[in-house]
Image (cartoon, rainbow, N blue to C red; front, side, top):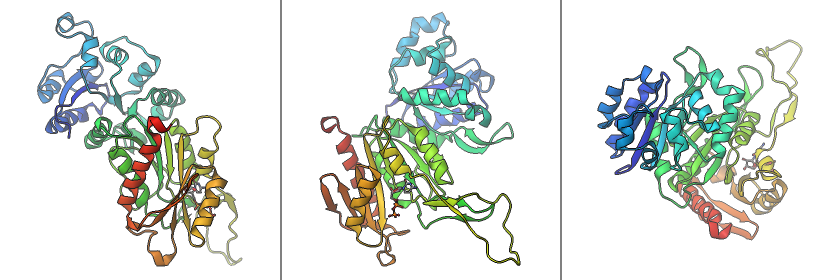
Length: 401
Ligand code: CTP
């Protein structure tokens, strides 16, 4: 898949640098050439010798190495790649990139190029969550830089949370997506998927039967057309697709926050089955049976993510697509829903138990747009996804904008 692709890999200084060695191996297995650049901090974690041995070529380490400058100037080095990958991208490197600093070889290369750029952040959870890093992430996303990860998990420093570098194969999948030629190349698309869980107390929650299958299939189909997909998913039954910018959430409010943090995007596809209600206040400790009778649960309305994105006055995605799961009067209800929420398209499906659609592998949908309704034949969810992805590509194509 990556045959003859040229990747400039910048290895930053973090404990995750050891995974960059495996990344080099995986990329070369797929036919890519990897030109490695090791930052001074990166060289504290992996040796130049092991990096160059795995890459099968010279590792560049210092801007002021005059021999290197004579052989290949840093400007040329940065432009002679199909993709620049930064893994691990430390908080420091990301801050330098966001600021446009050029104090060493890595940051100079990053400033001197217009080659597409993918970064795999890796840092302590607090550093990732810090407002300064979050500001830098917004800046970098706004500059069109693609992200692989970070993942949630246990970290080398003993803490747990987001900040762990994506696994080498996940980065490979993101690289394949970034280099894929397709009608959605260069487009950033948000997909929501799965159910949400709304806590009642620490052990109980409100949920629904959504498996996440349709949203996952749509994300995969959009990636296959070259889109840079931000995938915001509730706790779904099926595994998320590879090669997407994955954000796992539990509740509707977390999902909205993750979606807003993902902006700007060219299109938003809201396939999640978001819980309409949550507890007005979830109990902090487990609710116990009492002699006094049944518990009284007080509900509050959740934010409507689709409506919120559709009705933004600033930074509204060019195309917002919602889903309507109905059991009666499918077309009339879905048409009204499109207008009420303010989205551009509604993909409507009949989820009556007899159809077997909710939680099943097939779907039969109506696509409702401002020009009318199209009935698509019943087909597997991945075919619905592929057809929808192609329609999205047509809608975002420059001549129709
Ligand atoms: N949706 C959302 N946020 C919510 C509820 C729904 O983004 N809080 C989105 C879903 O992702 C889907 C669309 O809205 O794209 C339709 O959801 P649905 O639950 O069918 O609509 P409701 O607004 O709940 O309308 P109804 O009560 O008629 O079912």
